[in-house]
Length: 216
Length: 99
Image 1 (cartoon, one colour):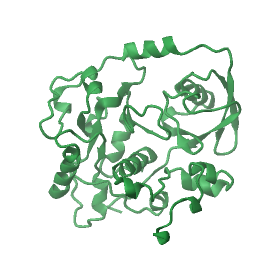
Image 2 (cartoon, one colour; image 1 turned 120 degrees about the horizontal axis):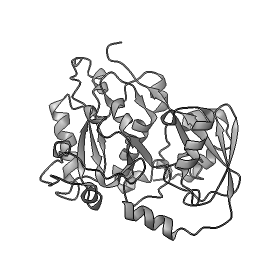
Image 3 (cartoon, chains in turn cyan, yellow; image 1 turned 45 degrees about the vertical axis):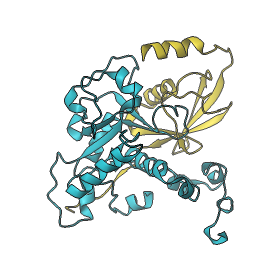
Image 4 (cartoon, chains in turn brown, red; image 1 turned 30 degrees about the vertical axis):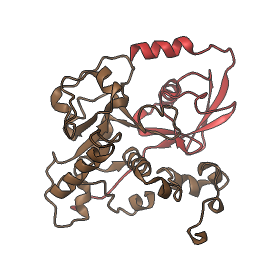
């Protein structure tokens, strides 16, 4: 991932500029557990259009973020939050009209955020993996400012990348997940800094400890 | 939310013991913090950033290579005395289709 970044390659996080892609993202968000929205965020960015070279016309409003709202919090943790209904556009029939934070935290609600909403969510943080894994190691905190990073022609940052890496990891089938180790975006830099800590960074595992495909 | 916060504060024992946490930046500079095990990291981050006069959003903190959440505490991360936290600069990059 990081190497890609440095080479100036395109990081694809899905794009709403393509109708099919939009549908795919929507289905991603509504298929798991039947009608319940996916307990995850989906980031969308027009930056991907670089891969589809014919698509240089990206509307600035095309970018979206689908967020699991069950772990939102304000910076000071106490500020009461109320989102206008129009910010809450869950896929499917999930009803969130007039939802306040208590409602949002009690159920998994998928929120569609547009980059223009960054201002409204100022001071808010979104944590992934969400609620219930509070002490999860290496979880990502996405701030409202990070929403701007998926704006067309903006650069992505480590938070967005790491969020998506974790999102991928969480959505792999269990048997596939065993075969991969997911580093965060800081790993490469650390790796090139000093070698001693690398084993620690990989959760104490060495390469040999990962089951090799050749054995099967 | 408010209730949750209160609960956390109420149930957290208040041990007198503190642990030393070393925040190290990428050039090797170290800042030492004495913190209680249940102190949320947001305090440490704020203190570090104001000491270094840097914008909080531009720095990410890692423990054993993993991100630290600002509302996590040293206890939650099983930190012990003298543990090292890395302060790394935000990574920003990508590709402009127009270029």
